[in-house]
Length: 324
Image (cartoon, rainbow, N blue to C red):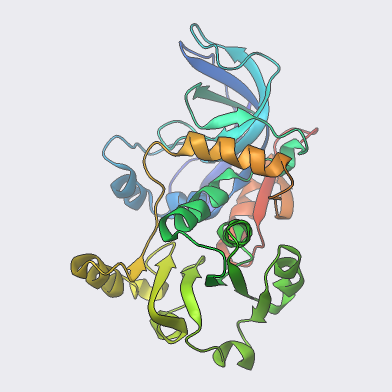
């Protein structure tokens, strides 16, 4: 099988597509023929900073030769004792960080990994959408948006941002989406009540009107979120922000117990329930994938380079199989 191998952690130039033997599923495992995968911010972070990922995940994490979290494909074979899925089933989900990833023609994975039968109304290369939505949902659940809450999402055009926008609207929140000008039509189509180009005076004129400010890309900065929040409002971010400047507000909030600044993380063991819920939302027409562009597996290094620019909208898909 063809597989994208990280020969040395660091830059996309160290990723090589090679032919290796196709694995066989062990007890309780599935062999999935991968039709589509993605390259996302988490993959880029693992490529550049594997030791940081280890600190976040725990001592059981080992450096992987194959990256890739999102996958969609068909079950090729099942190992002894595996009964959750059958050969031929179309499935989608997330490959755990503890096993080799999905940027390959075949993925050997425990049947208990977070995955489900693929939504009936999606193609394989549309169903690789779980990871960004999973992290966005952690913010929605922890912050507990209610109908009428005013939410500003900075970077609402990325994989996490487009998910956060759709999930907030499902909760009845009023959403202001702040994006680059070229993405204004996209966020309006996703249901944003207000869409603003972050490089314009309109963004600078925004005042203390928001119950929640969510930085989905780690670029907003302390000056901006502080001037946007109502008294008692909450700031949430996906990381430590530009130059790590969110670290002190996050520590102060944690030590003071006021919860005014948070990095929402999904609860341990919540991934399967989320994948099931996401499938139902998609099939009900309440959630849709946003795809920026497609690359073949042979060009996966180029996909990494593009994601590292920070310019993508939604998901960057790797079409592993011709029928993706």
